Image (tube, rainbow, N blue to C red; front, side, top):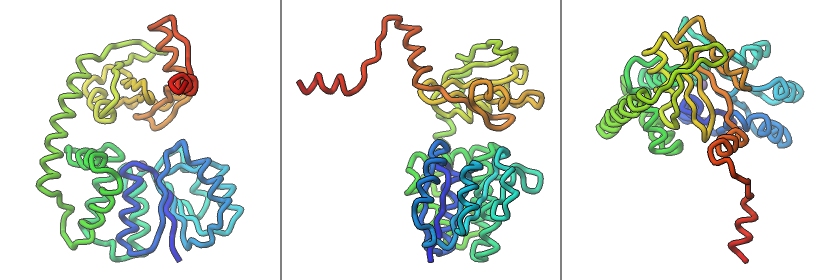
Length: 312
Ligand SMILES: [Mn+2]
């Protein structure tokens, strides 16, 4: 019988796929965005899940609705995660949510790895452990050099599927270290320089505002948002928080201060997250209000109307 893995789309989400590849087990997988979780599970339970021996869920916070579905069936689910808002689910014996391991922040890949290596001793290899640690540093932003971020960037450069294949192949080899190729090292060095230039440019454009009583540094940015937020919040501790405004997607909040919770701040704007890193949505309506404010005379025209005109 095969397994099913349901997981997130980022590096911490796809690394469990790599780990399962290394066990030699047959499995299928599905990567989900956070916004897709609820609908996916509702649909999943319309199908026959008895064809799977284990159904693993990694790096995704499930809702009480989904737990009600799981609990009313006999399928063998195992859930591994590290989000604080998901700790409530530890009441179920098939769930392992840990925010920290050995007093440092952990990630879903590490929580899953600790389970898998007991079951499949073949995973007890130093190069695999080192890769898992890199993923942990990427996901918790606890890196001390650029390499973890460079690897995450390399992943988006070559695409998820090729990255999974590449890392699986590399970790199958019995090496004492997780090694990078000459090209990867060069790519990572160049990316580091590029990100540094990007951040410095954004920094010169940062403006300060008082918002809801908080002293905020506001920047507009669409790329390298984690690195940017991390850099600015560390460099300007006098600011309560850093706001990174990505009008085409969402708004991110970052602080390094222990006396400020950006999760609380984000909740005011229908968002949420962690104490030091959070976000809130920026909707189509919000985007339209920017256009209205700037152009004044504007009217929405839907796609079908313009397409019809072209055809006639
Ligand atoms: Mn994660």
